[in-house]
Image (tube, rainbow, N blue to C red):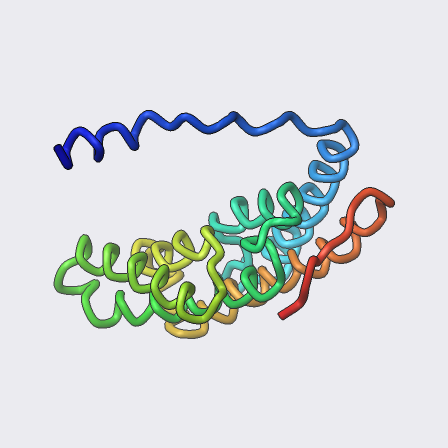
Length: 182
C-alpha cells in the first residue's frame, strides 16, 4: 500500500510554469552577459597570470537565479553570498579530510553537508552545492587555494555577480532586486 502511494507521487500533476515576457528575457540575458562577462574578464586579466581563477562553474547557475529568477528566495543576496562562501568552506574541509583517502566519499560529504549548512543558516542557494563539489574535484589549482577558495573565487565572484544584479536588474521599471538583503 505505501509503495503504491510512494510511486503515485512521482506522477507530478501540477501545472507547468508560465512563459515569461520579452522584457524579462531581455533583462535576464543582458544582466547575465554583463555579470559573467565581468567575472570572466577579471579572472582572465588579473587572476590567470598568477595561476588563479575568479570564475567557477557554479556561477553559471547563480546567474540563472540572480538575473533570471530574481524574486525567488534562492536568488537573494544572503543566499547568493552565504551559499557560495559556506559551501566553499564545507567543500574544502571535505577535500582536506577525505579527498586523499576516498574522493567519492569526499564529494558526497561536501555536497550533502553544504546543503544541510545552507538550510541551517537560511542561505540555501542551489549553485552552492556545485561550489562545494568543485572544491573536491577542482584539481590542483583549486586545491592550492585551500580555504581561500571559499572567499576567492567563490565569495568575491558571487559579490561581483551581486553588484551587477543590483545595478542592472533595477534599470527596468518592471524589475526590483533584491526582494530583501538579509
